[in-house]
Image (cartoon, rainbow, N blue to C red; front, side, top):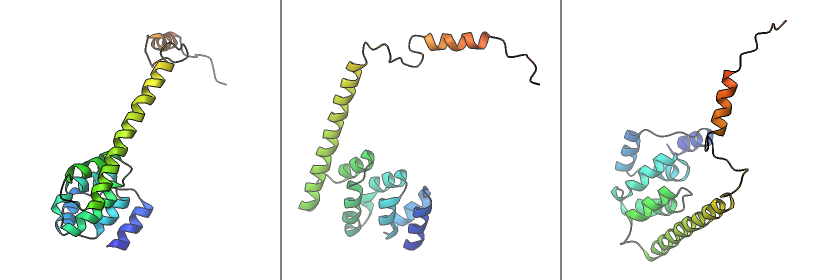
Length: 152
């Protein structure tokens, strides 16, 4: 099963149906490691939500993988599942990841504030249909008659 999943994920990016994921989780299947590393993001979110149902060894193995995920939702759902009762090394990893996501959120807020200040009074920056100017231009273009000339 492992080799088959690795080959499929190297060729395609696909979402595994829920009932198959539920079977994998209920059987503590080793394929969950591959899904946690290479799987569809919705599958990884589902794993993060249901990681408590696995046995302790699989929980800790998957937890490391899901904490290091690039998608914020997957990492935060894993952090929320395990607030207490984890080994010290994982507790430090959880603290680092939660601090990382907080810092990234603050940096994004600062960046959006800077860009909004820069573009506040700019005449080059126009929102789509912001003042209706581009919408009016499109209406004028549609009023013009089609080219009725001969093509030959």
